[in-house]
Length: 176
Image 1 (cartoon, one colour):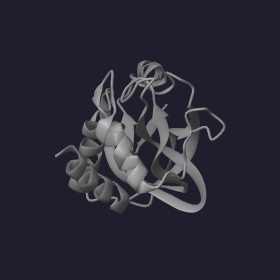
Image 2 (cartoon, one colour; image 1 turned 180 degrees about the horizontal axis):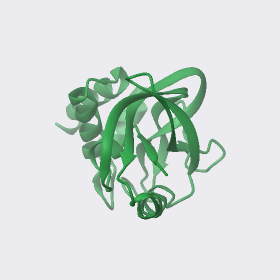
Image 3 (tube, helix red, strand yellow; image 1 turned 90 degrees about the vertical axis):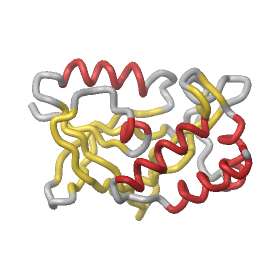
Image 4 (cartoon, one colour; image 1 turned 135 degrees about the vertical axis):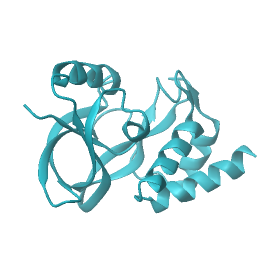
């Protein structure tokens, strides 16, 4: 059975599983934003950072990558993703339709924010996001590194995100 995963944040530059095919893809009904407080990977419970999540917003769309899992690796990949992405249950695992650049539509494992979870913080002003990202640090390193890697990778694949570019420039200024 073919398995696809929708990547919009760190899965773009650090998928952690074997990819058989990668294609630009669009997910309708969700926006990529720093709407999840990170208490493990990019912050701590005492000093949370911010990580990207998909926030359900009517009329929104997120450009990312559909990653087809290598044949035979589906179960191992799903177990890996659940361990990585569901560490605090702030994400919900959903099977959602995404449209590939070549017009194919596939169903992809997608991690979206639970708006009722305590780590949800949608709607923070960009300046406030920048201040948090500039100083937070967690088990996987500085929050700023997560932002820089994601913004750079989106540009590399031709899917630049204006808010992430603004945040990247602002955080670099704050960290200087």
